[in-house]
Length: 90
Image (cartoon, rainbow, N blue to C red):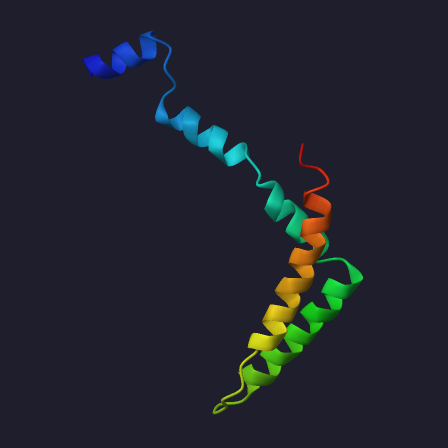
């Protein structure tokens, strides 16, 4: 208890204040990824991925997976992010 009182009197932030500050921080990469998912080419590859996931999910026994579609979508999204994100880096 004495230690806690000293921390409060010394003006050091307690754990609750640190957690609140961390919650307010937003990763610019995640924000940019969300914006890029709405670009025409990314929308097209995302639709292909969702169609594949639906097709594979509807079958009980299949060896098909959606790896190619996933990589196509991630490539398109990251390509968009790279062009937009690095222009804003100082």
